[in-house]
Length: 559
Image 1: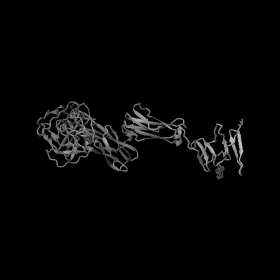
Image 2 (image 1 turned 60 degrees about the vertical axis):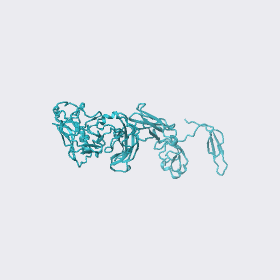
Image 3 (image 1 turned 30 degrees about the vertical axis):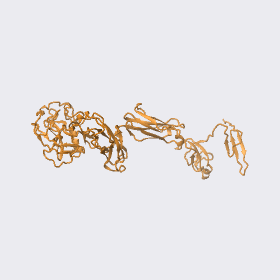
Image 4 (image 1 turned 135 degrees about the vertical axis):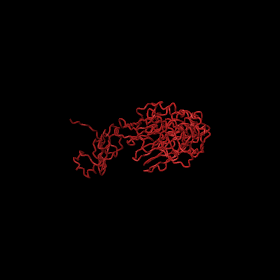
């Protein structure tokens, strides 16, 4: 069946050397001056162009009038076809839209809006590892043309998270950026959806954020932050340092009486093997304590091995909380490892008043064990250059004893020696808590350390031996008080000697140091020995001895 269509045409002849016919379509009216074809304004409708599939932007499709094969498209045909307009319906990697042949190739009439399935969103944030209660800015961008993107709106969401775990605030009228503050630590997915008036559906983009914790996937073996993990503000030195941990609860920090009023800067290190793009930042600061952080020199170097130093400067008016508790600061190092993968390392620094211990490493990476700075019953030992007295040596304990077997009063005899036959009680509690080596531990109810502290295990002493520098000491004098071994940069152990298992007499003071672990040694039916750290001026090791000897005790922080 053939349908006939009536078209109202209006013709006008232009008198000139070259006569042209002007055509008006839609009603009987003269065409507008200058127009060869006038779709009359009074008639509603549009020009429906030929719908084609352009195979290649530099080719006229076969099937056009007069073009039955590609060989028909000569240079003259290409030139004569200039100005032809078609509507490309898509495919072949060419966007849908109106195209004009310019003599050599097809060019789009205007930017074309992509359907939702062809939109690509890019979602970026200032960091993919965030801190709790710190607002971070997320931005999304689209591959839509400027004209189409102007109409786009964005919806932000965090699928699966509980309302109240986060707050989202759009930062622009179109919503292409948002401020997100996470209230609760965890792993979240941030999602952005793009809508525009030219597309149905929505394009989406997602990114994962880790809040208040470096995920295992972002850590790199052999790369870490290191330094003393405790910053002691020491605002008051009026307490008896022989009993730091027990009297601290009674002290209340004030804003005055600083023992260190000038030097508020501490040095830390980023240790690495072949890195680029290193940046150190403050991740968490729950007390607003940090004034500034310097950047490690040479952060843009490549293939570097070793450690790069940087400094953290604390404010002059740092406060500690009452009753011995304190604030903490978290540092974050971001870098690219030797595989050019983005990685992170973090470090916690406790900020306390008078309670910071003296740490030592217990692994080749950044794992520390915090010791008290004094032998139990003794004065603090913060440097190796102090004028030492017998009071720095502390008291002596038999393995497993709750109280000191001999309190240090500066004498060498066994006066005050109690329970001389402690070794005879070896049958007690052979089924208690065990350490990693399967040895029974010093009974918890007999722990001589203050609340929050305990004895180190034999494995921990061994790790201290293996993972710290132990520079040889010179000038030691037997029976002197100034024989002290330095361990790492922060831990000092005096050579307090030992007390006899028979009469309590003192031996090896100023020559050797003996420190109990919490681990026993022997058969399950006996456990007649205790494990200990032993050292003199140029050597150190962990071995065992009878439990009735009196050795020094150095407590470590209980986790």
